[in-house]
Amino acid sequence: VVPRSDAPPGSLPVLDAPDSSSAMPTGKSIQRKKWTVTKTGALSGLRLDEDLLPPPGPGEVRVRVKAVGLNFADVFSVLGLYQATPQTPFVPGLELCGVVESVGPKRDDLPTGTVVPSYEPGDLCMAVVRFGAYATAVNAPAHQTRPLPVQWSHSQGAGFLVQGLTAFYALKGLGDIKRDQKVLVHSAAGGCGTFGVGICLAVGAEPIPVVGSEKKKKTLMERFPSIAPNEIVVRPKRGKNFGAAVRAACVNVCVRKNEPDLETNASCDIVMDATMGDYFQGGWDNLNTAGGRYVVYGAADLTPAGDLSAFDVLGWAKLLWKYLRRPFVDPTNLPGSNRSVMGFNLIWMFHKVVALGELLRDLTNLNLPPPPVGETFDFEDAPRALRRFQSGETTGKVVLVVNEGD
Image (tube, rainbow, N blue to C red; front, top):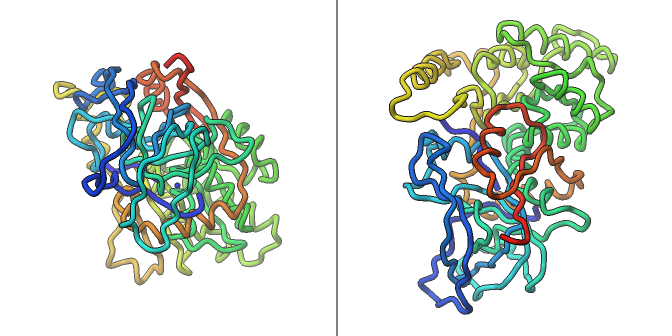
């Protein structure tokens, strides 16, 4: 199971930590707290401990962490269901925000065109790391960081890089989004979904947001008051009713825009989906046959309701049942239907530093507002925060906040 992963504004994604063999770091090691996954399968495998963080190596900056952003990749990696999960023990987490404490030696082996921000101690920055964010201090590759925008909070900064670039790559990099196109955005009240809706509006496309409840619909309308209520789909409990709801929303967009020929125009040009499961078919059936693109970046439907220990027969049976019933598309039928299914996980694309950096630059040029922070938890409450995030009841970004005493 591969949910989403993600990366950073101005120009970069996420590479592995720099090779420190070419230069010795300078400075002192510091004591820090960190959450470590000692055993996958259950949140009880998380342990809060301490270690010494060495000085930043070549191309790194040491960040005193103020906020950590949660992503579905965190849940899946702790449960052992994420393909990119490191061997235990490991520190989970992909994105953070904090204060630059020190800067390591320069790194000279990055590709031409890589943007590397310059920092002084005390500067505020956002960072993406390939795991390791659940800590009170982190050495992050400088090219995977960006200065925190003025007037943004640490919590907002911890919610921008991963989900913003994920949504933009889905819609622009793969979906090739254009003005006036209709875009079905699943989980629109969540982190990536909120970015997806915002990107659609910024480029002049027509978002058709999908949310899980009337409460989430209200939250979404407060952030995007320009979207008509009848163009938002509240996901029905039964997947077989989803297609009709999507079709109705498409028709409502056409009526508002006075578009003729509903048979042709009342469909989606792009679907942005991290839910899948029973709700795939309703989106696929409403994808237009003039080059419609179905972009998949996760499978939240396969998220277990709780932990998955080796002896949880019922839990594994439920997951297996969902897996066996997962949707299929016959590739031999795609040319005839003139549609495509496209999937991605940015964690496998970190070597494309310059290309992802250009996408990130274009994303920041849209001047989107800071991401909404739905809920915050103390750093010490990471297991409870992940459990809450796993419930699917949250809106906006869920963030761990590091207190001054930590």
